Image 1 (tube, rainbow, N blue to C red):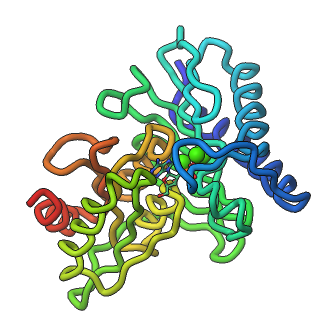
Image 2 (tube, rainbow, N blue to C red):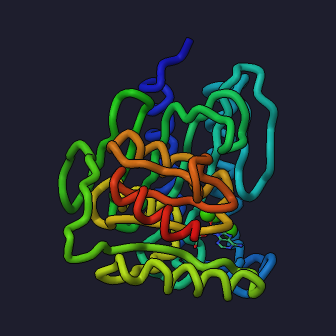
Length: 268
Ligand code: 2AM
Ligand code: CA
Ligand code: CA
Ligand code: CA
């Protein structure tokens, strides 16, 4: 048996090494290798190289574990544990030199499906500002920050004056009308809106109290695996529109009372 804390240590070690590689490649200059589904849906050489490093380190340390990564697909698990990895979350920020991108690494038990898995450990590391957000199941969530130092994370309900709400917009033009309709429906609860451009950083932002809430449609397992565990271990709630788990259809994260108000609004 491996404990969530042991998996967390491995996630941290690899996220720091992978983040250092991403930052190094960023300094050397970014090459956009391909445009995928849409103009904003890009992949750089660094996305692929960083995922390869993570996959290599994990298969050496834990050869029986499964793997699900954005850039290189799936590998099966014989141990019951699967690593769900986004090598660079926020690739558009990365390509433009905006310091809001992160390596996201999570260990989950069971399947690699967010509707079914039990998340055990997660690490989200933003090398551009040297901030690491971590959680292990049942052990709480922590931030190790070059700016703020080290602290345990705990969500708080927003001020009655209004919430700072982050969201993201789908790359597929067919989703734009729905994105705008949801945005206007949540505006009455908002003090202001943020579109940061990296789902993992939106989620850990909620855990750290830097954002009051986050919601987005269209996320993939690797966007949300580590971040949702970090929110939950910080005492927050994550999920879809009405009781289901966070996933492609909808991902909402907030402190419990505000989570209920926001999901009520979004589902109407
Ligand atoms: P990426 O940078 O790893 O591709 C932006 O809202 C967030 O959504 C980022 O975390 C981005 O991840 C992710 N994302 C990836 N593909 C997307 C898509 N087709 N539509 C919307 N967001 C997407
Ligand atoms: Ca991508
Ligand atoms: Ca992503
Ligand atoms: Ca990515």
